[in-house]
Image 1: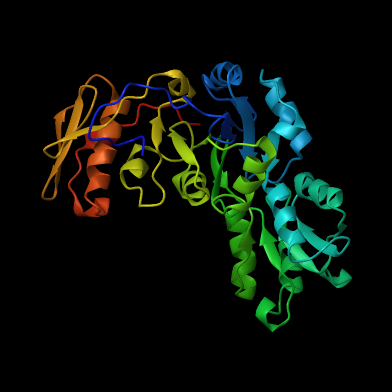
Image 2: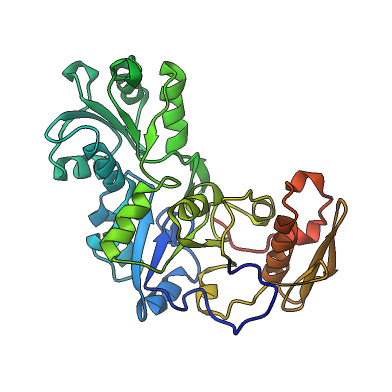
Length: 346
């Protein structure tokens, strides 16, 4: 794992030896319609040496619309460079219900477009006896849409009911004005009504990563995201190295508390760190050091022995020290300096 080593190897960047960089969008490249600081120039620089794919759980837009948005920000992106959760949902649906079956869509243009490209007939009404329900985020999704899904899903699948696939279950989504409810809240509303759980196609499940790795022919990819519970957990499940960037949802305190299975290989302040030598975390007699930052855990106390000259290095050292214990963070007394948060967020 790149975050923690007992001996210090030659320094490399997170991009060293990669054949693809897979980047989440919301909270990594942009928040709402605006590019995040340093994102565009850092990705443009990465594109000189590695294939970049853009991976999004947001189902509201088509791949072409996402590509156009990224291009307007200054990146060079085609629709083929964009992997969406609706694409993963259609791949998953094809294993359960073959086209040209009629499916009930709860969502926006991104989901409708992929369903039609896959050969399905789209309806918005449970009265059309759909063979499946596929649900994804769109700002215009209303109570009526959720009700139609609930009507279609009254019978549990194990009792002969139809499949229910959700593109993703993200609870929140970054917007220009802050953090807003995501698709997970809408899926939860239907779940509350019918008592069923959906099958998820997007992060943190594997289908969306499988689509991306296959499309880009990648063997040594790095996935970069801003959420531990979807981005990093999904990359871990898919066996892909991951980097968490602190420009979106999850903050330093979340990093320190990350459970096994949701811990990134790299922790980045912003995307400029993709191109910087990534310092090894070196352990000696229970002291975890990253450059001039050093942290150890003694009983219930997390102790900062040296704050060092970089907050990101202090966070990296603290995360390695806490994670090495195998214990959850709530059993420790953690100094506030360790989870100070000077990093940009939307």
